[in-house]
Image (cartoon, rainbow, N blue to C red; front, side, top):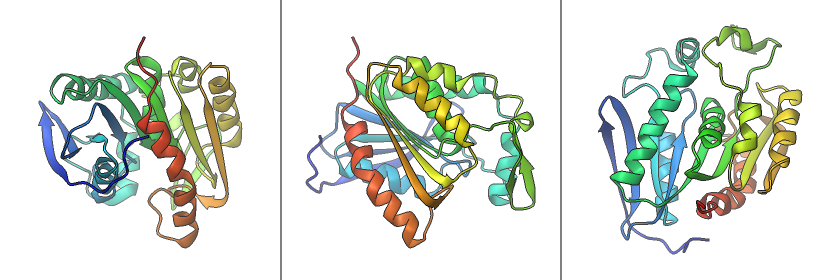
Length: 250
């Protein structure tokens, strides 16, 4: 575990060519970095706050912005609609570039991944493809099934996302190191998809922690209710432990 003594941090937005990122670092530096994969809302104040929290714990945190600094107008419904055009291959190219930056420019030597919602799926995909990542925390990872899910007046299923061509369930078997999956009961991802994901993760030699939160809704990681806050408080100690101690590369 990292030293939890309060420490000063530095935080700034930056660019890697066309990619927008946010970097939060402890004043004394760190060897371990955490790549943060945001919700469909992208690089917002919540993600900056999460990065700052990690930096205060002694970890360098970098947030990837899927919109390259240009979030869609119209809030989450517009972002969900835009996400239909996302391509897995393009996303993996982008997050790999961010991890390259963390290694080459920030001098980090070990890496963890933390994703929420849309970003939870990307974190699992990326970790299964990039052996540098040695730990993953995924909160309510959105893995669409065949059934239709309602989001206000909008309706979605896996058929609405043709760019999601990579199989995150199959890829999970290649994820190195510990994995934490946080599953709120009222989620977009169907139970059978969670079951398949956990089965695949448990076939690995590394630990898998599956946490189910009854009565909690999708987005509890950013929600403002007392129940959301309580679920976050329960998840956080394991999240910090997982992210702080990624499995070293062979």
